[in-house]
Image (cartoon, rainbow, N blue to C red; front, top):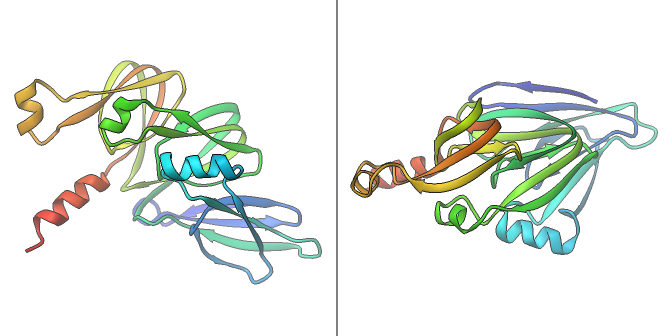
Length: 221
Protein backbone atom coordinates (compact mmCIF):
# COMPACT_ATOMS: atom_id res chain seq x y z
CA UNK A 1 0.00 0.00 0.00
CA UNK A 2 1.20 3.48 -0.87
CA UNK A 3 -0.23 6.50 0.90
CA UNK A 4 0.31 10.20 0.35
CA UNK A 5 -1.38 13.10 2.15
CA UNK A 6 -1.61 16.10 -0.16
CA UNK A 7 -2.88 19.69 0.09
CA UNK A 8 -1.88 20.04 3.76
CA UNK A 9 -2.77 21.74 6.01
CA UNK A 10 -5.94 23.50 4.87
CA UNK A 11 -7.46 20.91 2.54
CA UNK A 12 -5.56 17.72 3.33
CA UNK A 13 -6.58 14.74 1.21
CA UNK A 14 -5.45 11.10 1.39
CA UNK A 15 -4.26 9.46 -1.86
CA UNK A 16 -4.00 5.68 -1.56
CA UNK A 17 -2.67 3.07 -3.99
CA UNK A 18 -3.76 -0.49 -3.20
CA UNK A 19 -2.01 -3.50 -4.67
CA UNK A 20 -3.64 -6.89 -5.31
CA UNK A 21 -5.20 -8.23 -2.11
CA UNK A 22 -4.71 -5.02 -0.11
CA UNK A 23 -7.59 -3.15 1.50
CA UNK A 24 -8.42 -0.11 3.60
CA UNK A 25 -11.42 0.60 5.83
CA UNK A 26 -12.92 4.09 5.66
CA UNK A 27 -15.65 6.07 7.31
CA UNK A 28 -18.90 6.38 5.40
CA UNK A 29 -18.76 9.27 2.87
CA UNK A 30 -14.94 9.48 3.08
CA UNK A 31 -14.41 8.43 -0.54
CA UNK A 32 -13.87 11.34 -2.92
CA UNK A 33 -12.88 9.32 -5.99
CA UNK A 34 -11.48 5.93 -7.00
CA UNK A 35 -10.44 3.77 -9.91
CA UNK A 36 -13.24 1.92 -11.68
CA UNK A 37 -11.47 -1.36 -10.81
CA UNK A 38 -11.50 -0.57 -7.09
CA UNK A 39 -13.99 -2.82 -5.29
CA UNK A 40 -16.02 -1.82 -2.26
CA UNK A 41 -18.10 -3.64 0.34
CA UNK A 42 -20.12 -2.06 3.13
CA UNK A 43 -20.56 -3.52 6.59
CA UNK A 44 -21.57 -2.56 10.09
CA UNK A 45 -18.93 -0.62 11.98
CA UNK A 46 -17.66 -3.52 14.16
CA UNK A 47 -20.86 -5.57 14.25
CA UNK A 48 -24.48 -4.48 14.57
CA UNK A 49 -24.67 -3.66 18.28
CA UNK A 50 -21.25 -2.01 18.43
CA UNK A 51 -22.08 -0.04 15.30
CA UNK A 52 -25.30 1.24 16.88
CA UNK A 53 -23.43 2.27 20.04
CA UNK A 54 -20.77 4.07 18.02
CA UNK A 55 -23.48 5.83 16.02
CA UNK A 56 -25.50 6.92 19.08
CA UNK A 57 -22.71 7.71 21.51
CA UNK A 58 -19.48 8.00 19.56
CA UNK A 59 -20.55 10.29 16.73
CA UNK A 60 -19.40 7.79 14.11
CA UNK A 61 -21.24 6.31 11.12
CA UNK A 62 -23.34 3.18 11.46
CA UNK A 63 -21.52 1.66 8.47
CA UNK A 64 -17.95 1.61 7.21
CA UNK A 65 -16.72 0.89 3.70
CA UNK A 66 -13.92 -1.50 2.88
CA UNK A 67 -12.10 -0.71 -0.36
CA UNK A 68 -9.86 -3.37 -1.88
CA UNK A 69 -7.92 -4.30 -4.97
CA UNK A 70 -9.54 -7.47 -6.38
CA UNK A 71 -7.69 -10.48 -7.74
CA UNK A 72 -6.59 -10.02 -11.31
CA UNK A 73 -6.02 -6.27 -10.86
CA UNK A 74 -2.47 -5.04 -10.34
CA UNK A 75 -3.35 -1.84 -8.47
CA UNK A 76 -6.15 0.66 -7.84
CA UNK A 77 -6.22 4.26 -6.70
CA UNK A 78 -8.44 5.71 -4.00
CA UNK A 79 -8.88 9.27 -2.70
CA UNK A 80 -10.25 9.84 0.81
CA UNK A 81 -11.21 13.10 2.48
CA UNK A 82 -13.16 14.55 5.43
CA UNK A 83 -16.26 16.78 5.59
CA UNK A 84 -14.53 19.87 7.00
CA UNK A 85 -11.55 21.81 5.62
CA UNK A 86 -8.43 21.02 7.58
CA UNK A 87 -5.47 18.77 8.17
CA UNK A 88 -5.07 14.98 8.22
CA UNK A 89 -2.68 13.05 10.46
CA UNK A 90 -1.57 9.41 10.18
CA UNK A 91 -1.18 7.53 13.47
CA UNK A 92 1.01 4.42 13.50
CA UNK A 93 -0.18 1.84 16.03
CA UNK A 94 2.10 -0.99 17.13
CA UNK A 95 -0.01 -3.17 19.39
CA UNK A 96 -1.09 0.04 21.09
CA UNK A 97 -4.21 2.09 21.85
CA UNK A 98 -5.32 5.62 21.05
CA UNK A 99 -8.54 7.45 21.94
CA UNK A 100 -10.16 9.61 19.24
CA UNK A 101 -12.79 12.24 19.82
CA UNK A 102 -16.10 11.89 17.89
CA UNK A 103 -15.76 12.74 14.20
CA UNK A 104 -11.95 12.53 14.02
CA UNK A 105 -11.71 9.08 12.43
CA UNK A 106 -11.36 8.87 8.63
CA UNK A 107 -9.83 5.48 7.78
CA UNK A 108 -7.56 2.67 8.94
CA UNK A 109 -5.75 -0.44 7.75
CA UNK A 110 -7.33 -3.87 8.45
CA UNK A 111 -5.09 -4.57 11.47
CA UNK A 112 -6.74 -1.80 13.48
CA UNK A 113 -9.76 -2.52 15.68
CA UNK A 114 -12.47 0.08 16.29
CA UNK A 115 -14.15 0.14 19.69
CA UNK A 116 -15.74 2.48 22.21
CA UNK A 117 -14.31 3.76 25.47
CA UNK A 118 -16.32 5.40 28.24
CA UNK A 119 -15.55 9.13 28.50
CA UNK A 120 -17.84 9.97 31.43
CA UNK A 121 -20.69 12.33 32.13
CA UNK A 122 -18.29 15.22 32.64
CA UNK A 123 -17.18 14.82 29.02
CA UNK A 124 -20.79 14.83 27.87
CA UNK A 125 -21.45 17.97 29.93
CA UNK A 126 -18.54 19.62 28.17
CA UNK A 127 -20.07 18.64 24.79
CA UNK A 128 -17.32 16.09 24.09
CA UNK A 129 -19.68 13.11 24.11
CA UNK A 130 -20.29 10.22 26.51
CA UNK A 131 -17.95 7.90 24.64
CA UNK A 132 -14.70 8.18 22.73
CA UNK A 133 -13.58 6.05 19.81
CA UNK A 134 -10.94 3.51 20.82
CA UNK A 135 -8.54 2.41 18.09
CA UNK A 136 -6.19 -0.45 18.91
CA UNK A 137 -4.01 -3.10 17.32
CA UNK A 138 -1.28 -2.70 14.71
CA UNK A 139 -1.61 -0.55 11.60
CA UNK A 140 -2.28 2.98 10.44
CA UNK A 141 -5.16 5.24 11.45
CA UNK A 142 -5.95 8.43 9.57
CA UNK A 143 -7.74 11.16 11.49
CA UNK A 144 -8.80 14.63 10.44
CA UNK A 145 -9.19 17.96 12.17
CA UNK A 146 -10.74 21.32 11.42
CA UNK A 147 -7.82 23.64 10.74
CA UNK A 148 -4.27 22.50 11.40
CA UNK A 149 -3.35 19.45 13.49
CA UNK A 150 -0.51 19.65 16.00
CA UNK A 151 0.76 17.61 18.95
CA UNK A 152 1.63 18.35 22.55
CA UNK A 153 3.57 16.20 25.02
CA UNK A 154 1.86 16.42 28.40
CA UNK A 155 3.69 15.72 31.63
CA UNK A 156 1.48 16.67 34.54
CA UNK A 157 -1.53 18.80 33.63
CA UNK A 158 -2.53 20.76 30.54
CA UNK A 159 -5.67 22.75 29.74
CA UNK A 160 -7.43 22.41 26.37
CA UNK A 161 -10.51 24.31 25.28
CA UNK A 162 -13.38 21.91 24.55
CA UNK A 163 -13.74 21.25 20.84
CA UNK A 164 -10.00 21.40 20.10
CA UNK A 165 -9.04 17.92 21.31
CA UNK A 166 -8.68 15.29 18.55
CA UNK A 167 -6.93 12.32 20.13
CA UNK A 168 -4.91 11.30 23.17
CA UNK A 169 -3.00 8.35 24.55
CA UNK A 170 -4.60 6.09 27.20
CA UNK A 171 -1.98 7.16 29.76
CA UNK A 172 -3.84 10.46 29.97
CA UNK A 173 -7.15 11.26 31.65
CA UNK A 174 -9.57 14.06 30.79
CA UNK A 175 -11.74 15.98 33.20
CA UNK A 176 -14.08 18.82 32.34
CA UNK A 177 -13.86 21.94 34.45
CA UNK A 178 -14.31 25.69 34.34
CA UNK A 179 -11.69 27.82 32.64
CA UNK A 180 -11.30 29.95 35.75
CA UNK A 181 -13.53 31.19 38.51
CA UNK A 182 -17.31 31.25 38.13
CA UNK A 183 -17.43 34.87 36.91
CA UNK A 184 -14.49 34.44 34.51
CA UNK A 185 -15.84 31.19 33.09
CA UNK A 186 -19.28 32.65 32.45
CA UNK A 187 -18.28 35.99 30.96
CA UNK A 188 -14.86 35.44 29.38
CA UNK A 189 -16.27 33.35 26.54
CA UNK A 190 -14.08 30.38 27.51
CA UNK A 191 -16.71 28.45 29.49
CA UNK A 192 -15.66 24.84 30.06
CA UNK A 193 -12.25 23.35 29.34
CA UNK A 194 -10.69 19.89 29.35
CA UNK A 195 -8.03 19.35 32.00
CA UNK A 196 -5.63 16.71 30.70
CA UNK A 197 -3.66 14.87 33.37
CA UNK A 198 -0.87 12.30 33.17
CA UNK A 199 2.02 11.73 30.80
CA UNK A 200 1.56 11.21 27.09
CA UNK A 201 0.78 12.80 23.74
CA UNK A 202 -2.33 14.66 22.67
CA UNK A 203 -3.41 15.77 19.18
CA UNK A 204 -5.16 19.11 18.82
CA UNK A 205 -6.99 20.90 16.03
CA UNK A 206 -6.33 24.61 15.63
CA UNK A 207 -9.98 25.49 14.97
CA UNK A 208 -13.23 24.54 16.70
CA UNK A 209 -16.49 23.72 14.91
CA UNK A 210 -18.39 25.12 17.90
CA UNK A 211 -16.47 28.35 17.46
CA UNK A 212 -17.35 28.41 13.75
CA UNK A 213 -21.02 27.81 14.53
CA UNK A 214 -21.02 30.57 17.14
CA UNK A 215 -19.32 33.02 14.77
CA UNK A 216 -21.72 32.14 11.93
CA UNK A 217 -24.81 32.51 14.10
CA UNK A 218 -23.59 35.89 15.29
CA UNK A 219 -23.39 37.17 11.70
CA UNK A 220 -26.75 35.93 10.51
CA UNK A 221 -29.28 38.71 10.31
